[in-house]
Image (cartoon, rainbow over all chains, first blue to last red; front, side):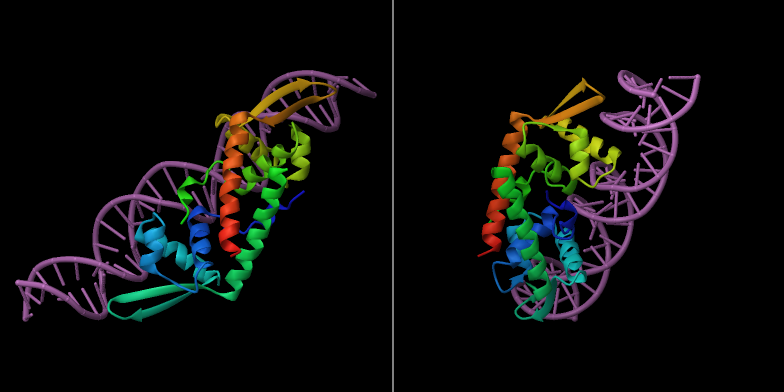
Length: 98
Length: 98
DNA sequence: AGTTAAACTTTGCAACACAAAGTGAGGTGA
DNA sequence: TCACCTCACTTTGTGTTGCAAAGTTTAACT
């Protein structure tokens, strides 16, 4: 039926799935905004973001404006991976709703 | 935006998600059929099924026909939980595709 | 009795999520 | 200038769990 092995383990985790979903809705997000949306500790959030960055899905941009501010955005690779992941979700929903 | 905490951890795992999706498409499945669809070791499959059973999502029926044969099916609770899970997936897809 | 297959159980390990606490850089207020 | 605060991050520790591999049990079939 489906090849569940194709599910991207990097994305398929509650925390990172939340991050990826948020990142896909805007060009970029600040650390604080992400933190505000996701009930996660600093450390946990940073770790997930670093994980996504190490997998090439997310860019990290450090700026010092008023306060230090780091912004995160999807790379093309990340956007593609997320799109592929969504395609599998769509198939699951389709099968499950039938 | 979304409450990602609401994602059911029992279902949101590659292996069990595969099982739940398959179970939702037919009244019942034999162990062998599940094993045929999912690239998983016996032990791993049994463990996931037991997990789902212990959470009240799946019934286990043991029969001895030609050979011993165990069949698995969704409970009402399991069907509801899976439906709720799919609803969240739909929201993610919708947000991610926007 | 010996073999084979189904459906487990057990064991062991590596990975990982997560919390909590600590760090350091760079403001801001007194 | 000194204390304090926030942001972003690191470190540490703990508990959970996914997973493979090997062993076990039960029952049929020869």
